[in-house]
Length: 505
Ligand code: FAD
Image 1 (cartoon, rainbow, N blue to C red):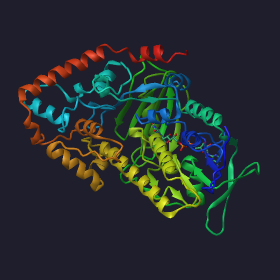
Image 2 (tube, rainbow, N blue to C red):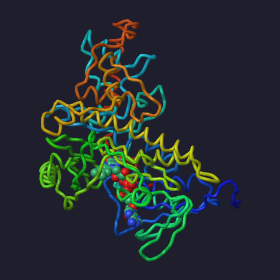
Image 3 (spheres, rainbow, N blue to C red):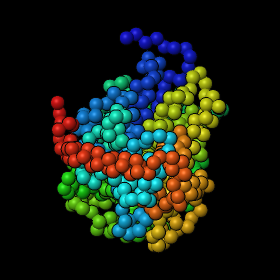
Image 4 (tube, rainbow, N blue to C red):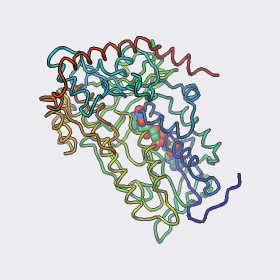
């Protein structure tokens, strides 16, 4: 194919600094969407520094990203040792010994403009219709260790489900690298040691590697992780610190051998001063303890993690430090920060990789043309900030809605939370209402699971739910429960599904 260079832009050379999940997602997306003849994309990464290597749980939007790239699911699952994820099982978050599930699907089936859970509340007041979780196919399948992919046929009960993946972060970076390199992205190995800016407008002109190699660019994407090499160290973009709302600032991580069947969900286990993740992959389980150094020492955290592992440790525990918050502006001059360089909430709802995908698609919607336009940059920064803020509220809810009394939980239970979160809680407490906003990543089903799971309950159901005859509602609930159970009984186990559908063809 002959590519003619268009004259409508002055961006020719795009330089991505960093080859972690953020760098390679960015490289894949840009090389897929932008016209190959018009742009030269270079990705610089340092083998000596390596990647953070812990982002291994995702949310369903990752499937849209894979679809955009034309990724074959079976090949991806094989090459990254992936497993399927139907949601997150939360232990001990409200009180020690209590457990709930945040599923990636709907509760029940919506039959009109009144939410299913409103009808369920009404019917359940009259007779015992079962727990709300019995109307979530994801929750039932997860509890039974079963898995089938959801579908989009509104007639099928499987349209009630959603799913994501767990994968090995290093294998995933390699997998994406292969795709990006095939699409023409040039990879340069080396450590960036210097950055040169235009003295007039402070745009970045070039980066310099330890080897003295100079790499010039028109647009720089900072995917250098917590180092924030360009956005922070060079451009001094301000960081909005959220540690008063999300006090965790450390994690200790260790992989273990698998024990038993591969669970189709992530586990999040609250401890007296932090919480632990268990992420099941085909070849190992990822484990980590997230904590705040104010409430727990590194030694205590390591001891807590090591004494709560299911399988034999495969490595020494690794300590990671982070700061929760985001850059006030993720795009400054000719540099856009994506991934950990732009900000980090904390891993509780596995949102960081989604925020990378979302940032790249936003950049592609507001891609600079002949010049860097202030309104474009402002729009990008406002949308990015809003997205982070909305996700933050959802993560904060987990910490805030607790009845635990240890110092960490006492602090998070009593801390002042954003007004936007208070409003959501108040609306739900009143009549169980949610108002899904288009830009809110987590919709009604997610908020409902976490609020209910952590002990926030509505005072009454929506009065509009009274419009349906009660006996009909109860009958529908009973039928639905039956159909859901039968559907789960017919599913293969998660391991059977992987073995059957993801084997090499
Ligand atoms: P990194 O992986 O750190 O990559 C940075 C890159 O920059 C590397 O290639 C490095 O070599 C390069 N680099 C840095 N400095 C230089 C230099 N001077 N010269 C050249 N190259 C350089 N996200 C989720 O979605 N789900 C999860 O379950 C999840 N769990 C997490 C748990 C913890 C404890 C933490 C801290 C994060 C977690 N995340 C999770 C976030 C996730 O790990 C990251 O969002 C994701 O891996 C992207 O990271 P990154 O590419 O921005 O940074």
